[in-house]
Image 1 (cartoon, rainbow, N blue to C red):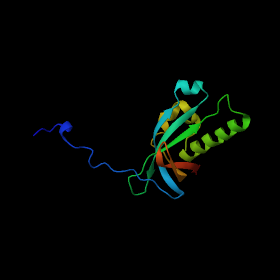
Image 2 (cartoon, one colour):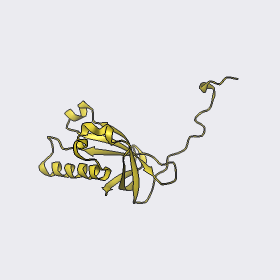
Image 3 (tube, rainbow, N blue to C red):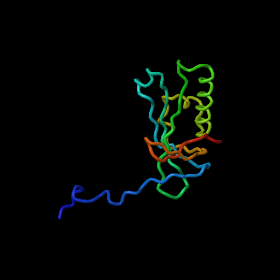
Image 4 (cartoon, helix red, strand yellow):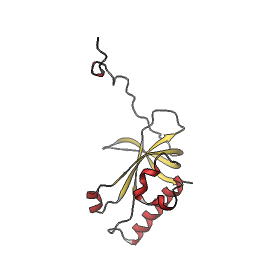
Amino acid sequence: MSDSWMDEAITSDAKEWEVLREVQEVQLELIDTMPATEAKVAEGKVWMRLTFRIIGVDGFLRRIFHYLNYPNSKDDSDGVNTKKLNVNAFYDALGIEGDQRAPRMHEAWRNRMCRAIIYFETNDEYGESNKIQKFVL
């Protein structure tokens, strides 16, 4: 008998992800950040993809993916202001201050906690998921 990982049925106990179906305020931990690629930025898509996990709720909960959209040259003045307000709400909720608010500092944001109101969504591409409606202080 071999002890090789190739001999074992290591996926037989995989769990299905769970989602929260009711709109509610939850505690989140930011576990990953990923800036837009240079190609996306060249297209005017200036964002940071944030990955959160829900804290303090029982179950095998699916991660929450959220795009933090930054202003770009293709936005009108209302769009620029809306994006600035949304980014500031994120920074405030996570307690990010001063020079840490620069997107290049995104790795320093990891492992911070915040509160947010989430909702349930389902779509053909990603299936069931939770989305962030808004960050709260």
